[in-house]
Image (cartoon, rainbow, N blue to C red; front, top):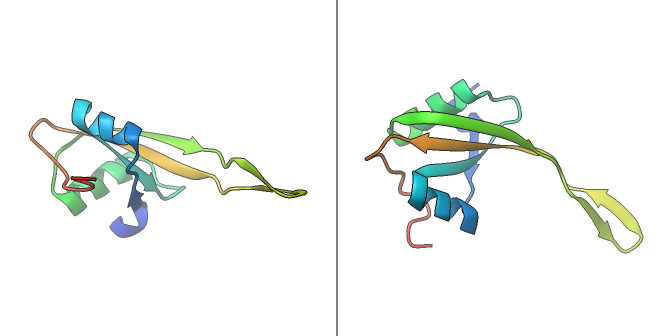
Length: 95
């Protein structure tokens, strides 16, 4: 799999901002079939940083209602990447 197919987008939420400031952790939405080794290598090569740990989880799609019709959002995979001390990614700074 290509590097830019593995990392789909960065997740910038209030919770991820606190984790970034406190523990140097960054959240990404990743490809559903990517494993933690592929995610770690992709982050190291794309952002040129040193990765210490990667945690991945599958996020279920929520059920949503639009009038009478019940629908469901798509499921997706999330990765939490912990960087080495001194490494930073300049994403979402000042947001």
